[in-house]
Length: 241
Image 1 (cartoon, rainbow, N blue to C red):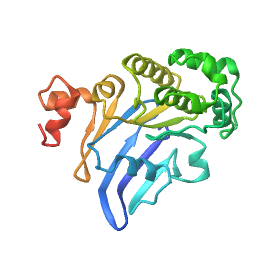
Image 2: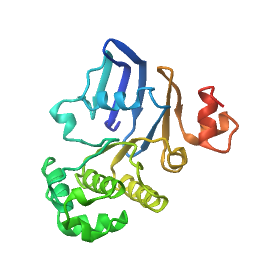
Image 3: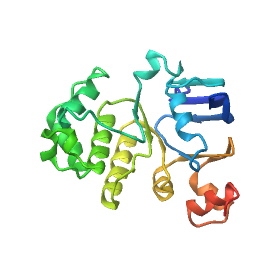
């Protein structure tokens, strides 16, 4: 029996203000994988993410989330999203924000679960009872990851989840995402830190000049481009080496 694809894009074109950003984009994200989305600034990664979430309309093509049309109520209940420019509600404390986020998915989260995830991401548990306005950028990013993961959503969509994090925190985040993956959550993420994607991802898609230039395993891209690093392989495939 074929499993339901968490995410499927068929011949999708995106843009804004009458301007096309990317055309004929097609790929599938399989259940239980970590899928990386790579591209230079301005290539349309965030626009495509917003489109697959139903926050923007596609110019052409079809997007489905667990077989439901993107943006539909049935699709949204299966997806948790952490945007690149994440700002938690300043007037809540950390625990309140995480519990509120989980409640949107009909889930109740215990303080013990929040504290365990905070420890896993090296966020000082004492700050969970403090207002978010006292958090640094990195602390706010960790809180966003905690809230996103603890929704229990089947598909996690993360746009630059390592933004503002130091090397220790990045290591912790990678470990947590690998655990999420082992527990059955599918992860779709975009990041400019290609070494992290090389370590995390089963599949990557490279977006350049409005089209997908590569779709497959990071190891295969490095092999094809005769490169030891994903960063150099990426630059080669888009002709910027």
